[in-house]
Amino acid sequence: GVTAKKTSPAPEPSSQPSSQPSTQSSTIAPAPSTDAATPSDPEGERLLAARKPIIPVEGIAAAALRDNYEQGRGSRRHEAIDIMAARGTRVVAVDDGKLVKLFYSKAGGITAYQFDPTGQLAYYYAHLDRYADGLKEGMALKRGDLIGYVGTSGNSAPDAPHLHFGVYRLGADKKWWQGAPINPYAALRGAGGAALAAR
Image (cartoon, rainbow, N blue to C red; front, side, top):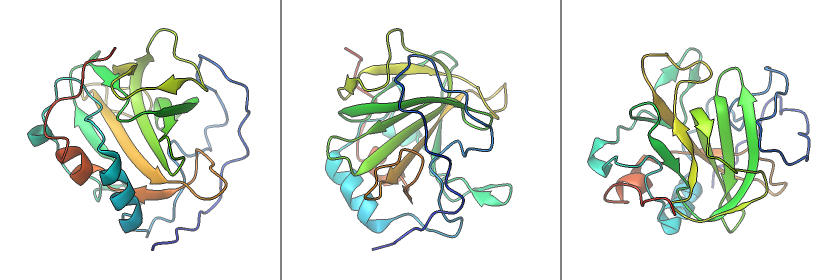
């Protein structure tokens, strides 16, 4: 399998749960840090496909997804997919699992990190407009639960609301900000349709 060693990991985050995003230094990467030359992790892709994730933006069909994982973003690769949708469209959990971090960064804006139930995968939701009412770090999420709403926070163009959705295979230490990047496109296309309604 691919072993992605991380460069310049972020400092250990606070473990204080909060319903508000953390406002740590903007030098922290908006998504788990990876080696820029690391391709999508094949073992991670297998794990993700086995989880059968749903599309995290309500009303978006699988056929509407675009694979922009490999696209350049300045000197780095995107390592996520952008799901275009109207501002305020509901963003839902792709899988069951624990909401491990609510975080604000200069690049990602309002973000949320969720681990899958096995603790092997981290789901990253970025550029949110706002969180769902009552969302808190540490809470258990079910597939289809409301996380927040599509927006343009962070470095997103204000006229292009979208969800930046990334998936990472976690290391043994389970740090939300580190992992081997996984292209979620194939697994989400396998979802075959729009996201489930939030409960």
